[in-house]
Length: 234
Image (cartoon, rainbow, N blue to C red; front, top):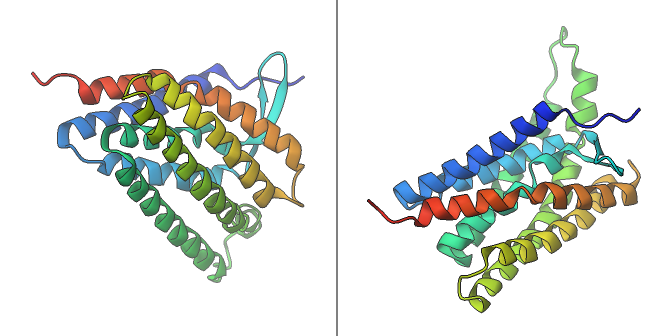
């Protein structure tokens, strides 16, 4: 029998990403800087590369799909992008993307160096290390391509819609930028990362579906973040 993800895990996940978004918004309001949002963004992307090595069965009751575990965190990189874009505009957001991209290069470099270093004779984790971490350079390379295209695409749509709507209808900008960007990212990433390793099309479908459903959790946190940042000073 296919078991759904435990409710405790779902609640913990929602509480964690929600707290991160609220803290990032509170930091922006307090210091008028993007430091914490950028830091969280970099961490989310790094963790997504590691989590992508595990596949999860998502049971939504009427249907089930399989997707990399990274879907639990990756949609919220778009949330952080949108928070910064909403507050500071496209140029600051592109700077944030560049910082994250450079950090990914060094992450892969150090993972490769750690893999090449000779292990201690008593260490029993060599097989597990190679099984998981040697996938990360390929996953990260695929992620770089998908990430630069989809995040830039998201940034352009969000900025364009903000001008067209004169800063109104945040929900529309959020949906219209995130959904196509998440779908584009899923197609590029899965095809490049898992061709020849895992069934590509079921994973693409699973990742698009789960990202869109999980991304729906974006809305309350996005509005809450904007309220925190823009509420009148006492």
